[in-house]
Length: 130
Image (cartoon, rainbow, N blue to C red; front, top):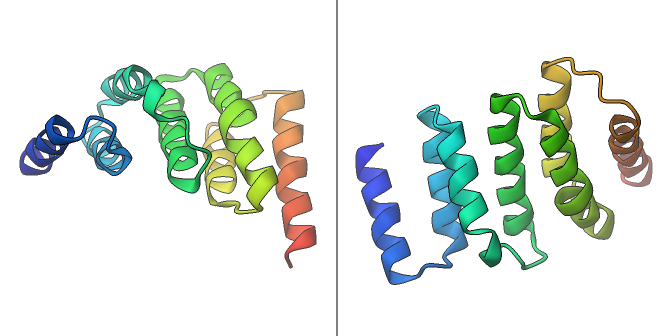
């Protein structure tokens, strides 16, 4: 992962808003168990995550993985409510929504009403796209 991290850093020196480099770095943080660094990195670069597209949505999903690892489930739900669910509702593309729901279920957290909203969105997506 050292070589990959060097390549990502070089890429970001050339183009500081390279969201594909953000994505590669997110995988490096995940694979090397550096969740807090992943949170800090994406938070620092939040200003570049303004495009409403699948990659930006997926970077927000990576942030939910970081927060899940850190045990901050309220932050996970906040990201779903404000960044992932709206893109899903607009596009109908479920991969970020479903994966995040699996992370939440894996840790068996009791998260109340928001969890039901996410579940309802997922069920509605499958009903529309069998």
